[in-house]
Amino acid sequence: MVVVLMVAEKPSLARSLAEILSKKQCRRRKSDCSACDVYEFEGIFPPGGGGVRVTFKMTSVCGHVMSLDFQPQYNKWEQIDPVDLFDAETMKKESMPNLRIPHFLRNEGKGVDYLVLWLDCDKEGENICFEVMEEVEPVMRHQRIPSTQAVYRARFSSITESAILKAFGALGLPDWNESRSVDARMELDLRIGCAFTRFQTMTFQTKYAGLNSSVISYGPCQTPTLGFCVQRHDEILQFKSEKYWKLAAKISRGGRGGPVVSLDWGREGLFDKEVTLLFLARVQDCREAVVVGVAEKPRSKAPPIALHTVELLRAASSKLHIGPKLAMDYAERLYTEGYISYPRTETTKYPKDFDFRSILSSLSGHPEFGEHASSILRTSIKPPSGGVDVGDHPPITPMRSASRDQLRDSEWKIYDFVARHFLATLMPECKYKLTEVEISIGSEVFHWSGTTPTSPGFTAVYPWQEVHGMETSVEWNKDQHWNVDQMKLSEHETTPPGYLTESELITLMEKHRIGTVRLPHITF
Image 1 (tube, rainbow, N blue to C red):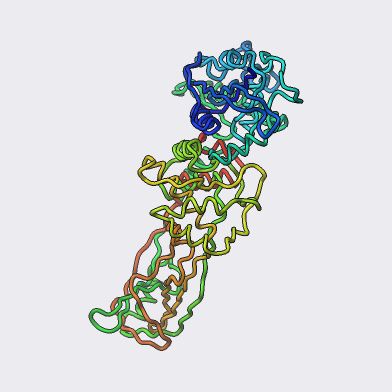
Image 2 (tube, one colour):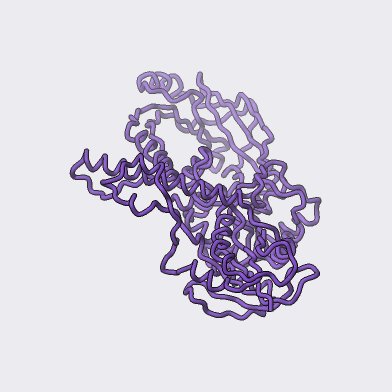
């Protein structure tokens, strides 16, 4: 019988794919690689018509099969000038020698007729395709079915039955150019990283005899990122605080139980206390405040654009209090189990043929945000006009409904955010009213401002951007008189910028194009 070997990027993904393609009729067996099981089942290949009955073997690798390194003679630091590493010979070696992945692939690939590659659909995945091909192609048997090719590439963005069957029915070829771009990046990372690591390690060890470090490493992505942190640290150390003063006023109206409002002085804070005291003396005895102007302005907040990797990691850190590394681990697990789409993408614009209705329908019965999904389904779906399609993967979206009970706590937080973000992109803008009031106390002008939500729009499902109303309902009218309850001098001090948060650091990495969608969480 004809045998088709199929290879995924991770063991968990191989299991999910095998269950979908075999309709849960696959048989699992152990292999000579402790990390990678093999799932066997029968089916038709090629799919779609004209195929014959074959045996499928679905298995996986564990990420990259090979890594890049210098030839052994370049490992002697004291004998090799770091500059020589820019021209030194390199070689491929096993990424995880203990797993013996190349041997495992050759063993499973021996005598097979076809190879179908189910590696992740990004540049790294494309590179792993060719690593797998290098091990399997030499041991494959000549084809028994008339065909023009023996190796196929499956392209998919989610682990749902419909997406996987669609990918299986439209097999293509792996992309050599994308794979070569990864080879180029790996070589640059190796040469730059090793050359500068050796250079600065030997330089500092010579200059500082008591240096408590055997290696001072340099990373092409990590070091510039660390530079942002050092720059902010220097700004904090060099910052000199200065005191400044303001007038602070409280006014009330309507006697006991009436509203009490704190006002902002119309002037900027003054760094001269004596001058500020002069202003205080001019209004200290005033007992009446008069409203001289009221402006009510309609404001709106646009819904978010579609979700990409950087925004997911940024939001996980700032809103969910989950670090980038863990956030990506949880997102990948959710993707493998079919709950969300592929979590590594730079695209923030939905494709023109994106199937919104099927996702919304799957969410419509959800106990926490199902009503919002149903509401969108009842209207004309309007995707956001903004965003960019960079041609990699669609934005990150939910693929099927999941409850809190089905997921671990942190996985649920990531899923909940992805689902709410998706719904928010399809909902109306949030509308609110901004009220700005100008108040005169003696010869000085004070200000007050507040917001009042008028239509929550997308924030009904996306609470992280909710517009909060005023704690106390206050009616303002021009020429209105208020009582001055307090007028005093308030002392303040300029403060240095805070240390960079993970979210801010991710933003800086994106702004300066440091790394790839696979790297922010690794850098941290």
